[in-house]
Length: 389
Image (tube, rainbow, N blue to C red; front, side, top):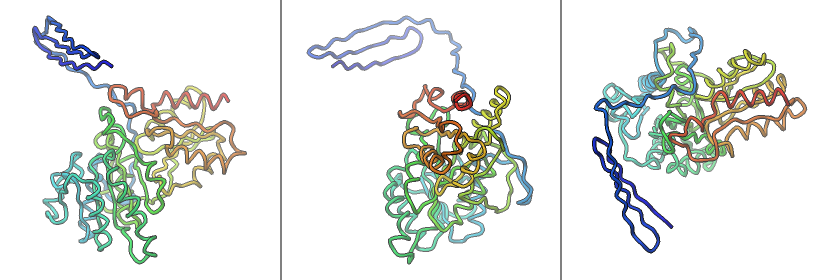
């Protein structure tokens, strides 16, 4: 079995050394490459995102608004909470400095180091501390720096937080715990900074799982999670932190949990997604209308657990077709649960097999991310296949 190690030094008159080890013998190949390097090195150009963010119409029902991107809307929600609730605390890796995505910037200076503070790099400890704080009566808001790193805390979330009320016969609970985590692909995150782990937690009664699509939804849903009487996991699409900009209400407001939102009414196909994928599906719906004359009904699920079966099933009864799309791998993804439920409830109304357009069953790639993500072209092909069934 051959193993090779390559060391590449780039520059004018650079040399490339390749050491190869073969079974039974050791050979070293020295390859000299003469390179004529231009002093003006051409920088790589980053390609456009796989979606275009489309803001919702400006809402006035919650009072005055301010232009915010998604991370600023999260900061605003946390600011509102700390101001209104003296028991609220925010903690996690680097949150005292503002966090890697700046979601907590300025909050330690405003509310003090006893209410916004750093933790060791220990996700299990972060969530375990949050459970204890919530049980003791605090409003505990924990940050996991990336959703990809939530797995060390899996036992604390699934076996402790989700079961605390049940195992005590409702004598005790940690319902005042909210866990925030940046989620989903970002364009360059590769296998450890791009994952969408919502389906892992959808199998766990006792917690709620939420994914917003925009700044307005992010603030309202996060405040609903913080106020909810159950522990909640709030996944924030990190590619939208700066890409998504809307007029966001400044004051406190909430968006109901477990209620899907119909963003566009249609008659031929139901499209279901959440988070970033909603913006992909907006383009897909437009393409289907322009190129195929197909009317699509677009639904943002928003809450993964417990999810709004009624809204989805009513739509499928009307359209007869369903396409579900998410970034997570297709096998065992939450699209499978939606598909199974709709098939059971709406079987006689279906005009075509339910379609799932999701990530592949591979680790999330780096340079091949554009081929991995369920982009608008894959979703558009799925619609054509359903219509022609």
